[in-house]
Length: 104
Image (cartoon, rainbow, N blue to C red; front, side, top):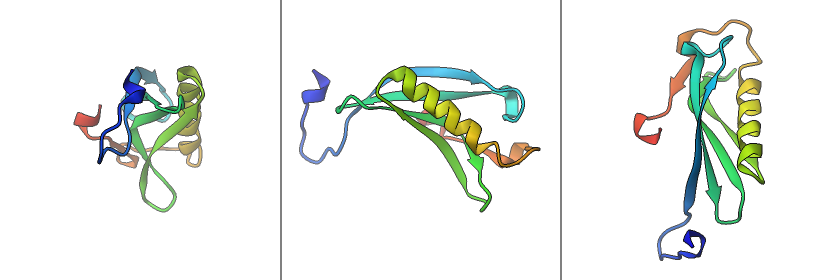
């Protein structure tokens, strides 16, 4: 099983277990972004968005969510994204950046 693999110099192994297209039409540019869900060895699931949102300090951050199941991590990641876009009413395309294409 992949969780039992141990290699010197390797800090962490995660398994991609899901990729989702998320349609959000009010604030997101182009209406769609992606979330990838990874399983860690400890049976924790982590979700990452491919879209990064500008924060009040001018920095860009992607949403990250966690859960004990793939579904919990997906839901938490969506909630985290919606929280990130809640501080501002009107969004411009320049308020968003995309993750590297090779990451998604």
